[in-house]
Image (cartoon, helix red, strand yellow):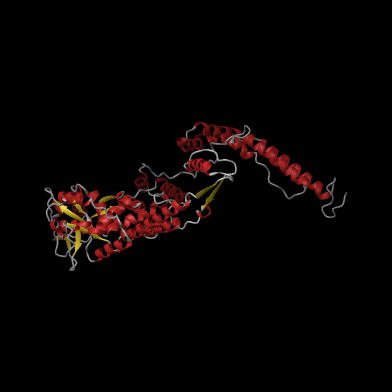
Length: 531
C-alpha cells in the first residue's frame, strides 16, 4: 500500500455526504451486521462512526473509556537486576531500554495511535500503518516516524480470512489490495460494544418516536367550550372568535353561562416510554462497562460522568492498556531488539500503565503505627517514599507525649499540671462520714503536693508556652538534664505534702475509732442501733 493519508481524507469527504442513520430500521441494521459477519464492513462501520457522534449514551461511553486510557502514561520497563536472565547484566537491560525509548519518542502521533487501537473495543478492530520519513510504509521498527490510523470502513475480509484494503467500497472478495501485515499494527475485539449500541439506538429511537406521538396527543388535553344557553346564530360567531382567541394562549372573558371542559388529562401519567428508553440505555451501559455500572441517573447513584464510577473505567482502561502494549511489543519491541541485540534475550519492553502515586500521608501514618508497636522503619525507605531527609535517633529515655497541650490547656486560671493535681474524687462505697473524709483528704493532699511541685510545674508551663512545636522535644530533654535535678531536690525538701498526709492519717484514725465504737449518730456497725 502507498501512503494513505491524503487518499483517506479525500474518500472521507465524499462519504460524509451519506447519512447512514437516515431511514435506519432494525432490518437494515441486522442486514449490515450480517454483512460484517461475511467480512464486508464498509456500511456497518460508517454507521458506527455516525452513531458515536449522534447517540448520547454511546458518545459518553466512548469519551470515558478512551479518556481513562489516554490518561495513562507509557514507559519502557526492564527486569529488576536480581531477576535478569543468567549471563545478562543491568547494563544490557539499560541499553535495550534506551534504544526502545528513542524509537518510541520518534513516533510523532503515539497518543493518536493508542486512541485508535482503543477504538477496537467499540468497532471490533483497528489498523495502524507504520510509516517513515516520507510517509511510505516501513517494516523496520527503527524507521517508524508515525503510526497512521486507517479507518475501519476501508477494510474487508475475504473468504480465506485475509484482510484487504478496499477504498472503492466494492464489497467483493476480489476488490482492494491484500494487507501486508508486516507494515501494520492490528487489534481485533470479538464482541465490540457498537454491535449492542446500534440495536439500542434503534429501540430508543422508536421509543422516542412513540413517546413524541403520545405527548402530541395527550400532552395538551383536548379543550371544549360550551356556549351559554340562548346564544343565537349572530352572537355565536362572536362567541366562537372569543373561544378561539382563548385557545391561542390569549386572555379574555366569556359570556355568563359559558363553560370549559378538558378531555384526556387523566391518562397523561400512564406512559411506558420512559422506562423503555431507560432499559435500552442500561443495556448499552452494561455492555460498555462489562456489567459493572448498572445505574444512569437514579438519585444518589451518579451518572455516566459521575466520579463514583470512575474506578470502573480505570479498571477497563488498564485491561485495554495491557492488550495495546502487547500489540506494540509484538510489532516493534521484539523485531527491533532481535535485530539490534542478537544473541540476547528481550530485557526491555514498552508498557502503558497508570502512574503509581504513593499516598505519603497514609505511609507516614503506617510508620507511626509500626513505631508504636516497637518496630523501626528503615530511614532510606522513609526518604524514598516521602522525599523527606530523615535520620533515626535512639532515645536515651522514653519520652511520654503531653496530651492536650494547646487548646484548652488552661481552665479557670489553672495550668494543665494544676488540673492534674486537682482532679475530682471518685465515688466511694464507704460510709457517708468516710466518703466525706476521703474527698477532703484528696483535695488537701493534692493542693499540698501541687504547692511542693509548683516550681517544676511553673517551669514546664513556661517551656510549653514559649517553645515552638518543632523544638519542644529538645527543650524538654535539656530541662530534664540540666534544670530538673535541682528543682526535684527543692520539691522533695518541701514539707507541705508530708504535713497534709500526716493530718489526713490522723483524721482517718479518729474517724475509724469513732465508727468502730459506735460513737455519735452513725450507729453500731454490727447492730445498726443508736448508741
